[in-house]
Image (cartoon, rainbow, N blue to C red; front, top):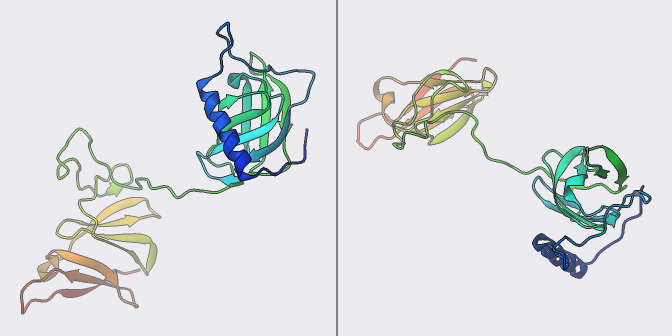
Length: 247
């Protein structure tokens, strides 16, 4: 059933959030059972409103409505077609977490029987605005957590992602203007690496002669020459070198 939504001011919001907090504790009757109004199969499931109106993966979402029942194990909530984790439910309020990838934003509540079969279903016209979060994770490189020495818990291996060892040091990152799929990683006095996003490989690059000194920066000229800036602390020594990497 579709219902028109209501607007709630901030005072009501905080009051309801406090109510939800009390629900975590759980209200017990004199017999020790949980108080609540069970689902009524003769009535429709109604979602009348929800707060907040937008958020990302893991955001807390509070639904208002009617005939949700009182058993969170028998209520299924989907947001944008993705199943949400239901935390607590009363007959007219439901508290859940926004699932990952809920881009479509449509909110649906389904009440199930003991076998997981659908008994009743409700939705709301208004959509939740899903906002993607920026997450930081490991793209490439592996270490051995059982070896505590950070200088020895990985190997320098050239190979495909998943079998390419680790990166000793990362002092500077720069993309190759001749090949946007290749990321150069300056390793300082350690090994310099090349991450190839197209081939999904990690390889090493070495410089000879004076250019093999500890390197501060790897960069590129406008015409695509690789610039190697070495850490030179003495006079009469070169510290800037240019290499052609090819296309």
